[in-house]
Amino acid sequence: MWLFLFILALAALAGLHFRWRAKFQAQREQRAAEMEAFQRKQQQTSLDAQAQQKVLFDSMLEGLLLLDRSRKIYLANRTFKSLFGVKTELRGKTVVEALRLHELDGLLQRAETEKQVLDYEIKLPGLAERWLQVNAAAITNAAGERDGTILVFHDLTRLKQLERQREEFVANVSHELRTPLSLIKGYVETLLDGAKDNPEVAERFLKIIERNANRLDLLIQDLLTISALESGRMKLELSPVDLHALTDKVLTFLHTKAENKNVTLINELPALTMNADANRLDQVLANLVDNAIKYGRAEGLVIVGGKKLADGALEIFVRDDGPGIPAEALERVFERFYRVDKARSRDQGGTGLGLAIVKHIVHAHGGEVRVESEPGKGATFFFTLPQPSI
Ligand code: ADP
Image (cartoon, rainbow, N blue to C red):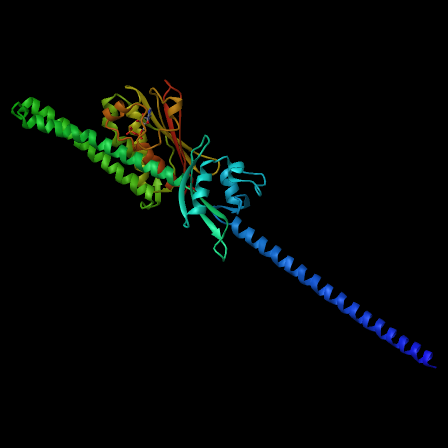
């Protein structure tokens, strides 16, 4: 009897045990499933955050480089890779291994010790000149310990180029102003020293002074025009322009100058009307024809002509049969102050700005300029006016 009761109790206990175990097992499995789901969610959140971070870093205009505690690259954004032309994976490499730029190593060391954002400029090696500004700072955790380093790279190349252009421009302008000014000063002093008492000498000197004062005036006018054109302050006043009539006006204006050199001027432009700024277009044609007379040959021929292109744009040319332009100068004649023969240009009263002004005015009309020349066979300057004719 006792044995029977004992076995019954044992069976009941075993039953209870198996029920608890099954329940416990189910609870454990549920907890494991919940845990797994939580981990998956955490992973997904972390992946999403990483993806967002990547998009954010890749959208930056600056190059970004994050280094870990042992100065190994942890992250390099898209701009950084394109700045340095890197296509391979950089993660895990040191800056020197990745870029071969030893001077950055010194900057990294300083960034780790000096607790401030460092500013540095580097010139990248290579054929084309490239300048970068680098900001470096140590990344610290909440306890103030160094966790890594952040480097931000800005491309300074364009800024440096503009700075150099500005310096060159100022130097050129000063030089161009100084030459006629010192001539004026010199002749005035000589006149005051006694030359004024000889009427013949005085007249010759005064004419030189007048010529140089005119040159200064021309230069200042050209400088003001180019500055207005380059800053975009000059607004075009568009109206229908009869190009044949405008060319006639320009040729009449330059008639005496051409006659002095026995140069024949011909207007071959067909009757075409374009929407353009008449005064500016006058300036373009006058500069080109004036150059053709100045640099063309004595007793030569200067022709202004043009045609309508397939797309409705007009192409106008100014052709001379002078000595032409050497091949290496063709690309440069439109630059400010560039002259093939400096002395000749100054002799002819040139400012070195005429073709730069032509280029700007044509560009403002949406057109293009170019020159074709074979040394000894003259030069032809072309420009287009892309508006539809009216
Ligand atoms: P400049 O005031 O010296 O004439 P431009 O800008 O008008 O300045 O012209 C730049 C240079 O291009 C000139 O100095 C000259 O050397 C060259 N050039 C321009 N037009 C001609 C041409 N028709 N034939 C030969 N050389 C030319």
